[in-house]
Length: 359
Image 1: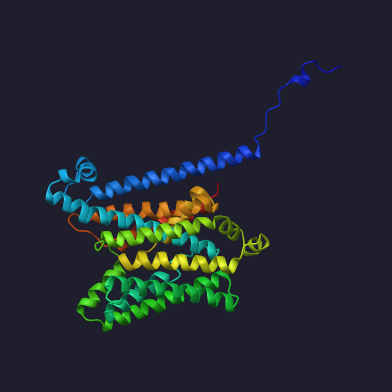
Image 2: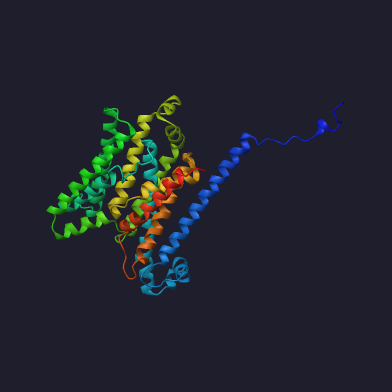
């Protein structure tokens, strides 16, 4: 029996090409990044509108585009209180999210973050030491002295972890244990400084340990914005190397990635980001841990999308936490470190359980 004459002309379904798959892959992740950016912007606006006194959206738009039309009291609330406070929440969240993502990749450990590895506690110790000693850097003021000591302490703690790991051939689990040991050591040192401090210094140290946006000002907002922008540029220049390192140290070396030099650069960036952010607002946990996990679930391991996604997820988290800190107890603004811990723990558990659930 001869085949039907039309058998050979039956259209064969076209298989999707590799290039088409890659275009869909990148388009979907760009859309997710845009969605995260829009969500962070909405959270920023809601944070500005939230507070003890009513500030409607129409007055916010008028104040932003025609500030001369606002009454004196409204202008003070918007430009001296609400805007620096809300912008600082976004910048600190983005800085901690980016620092956590880079730390997790450099150590190839999803549990690594500036908080869990003791870097935040080290920064708090540096800030507390500057407060107790009353340091003033060449007449530049206490703010710069606190920032510098927090940064140096955070950088020293991170370098110590990496040095121990390199000298003793420690595995990932041991590195985390080193970080936990540093966390408790620096906490003990902070308690010692609190014991020795006078009442004014003790009050300032307590500010760091609880985390607060109350001292946000345009000067500190500008400093952190510049540092975040510069570190983000350098982080994005290493996205291919970071993606290769995430697949394993041996794989990265085989591709020509200078692993030690890359890790040192990451350590310096993480120390600068975490040390500066924490020196301005105090200890804020879970953002550097949970933000990168949210970005990884949405965007995967491609660091072209993962790093900016982690920064946006951190900004969104801390902006929402800032809004909650002003609404949970009417008439009281809670320290934001308390809110991030209360919200971050159940959110982190949900992420862990969601990843382990069979699909």
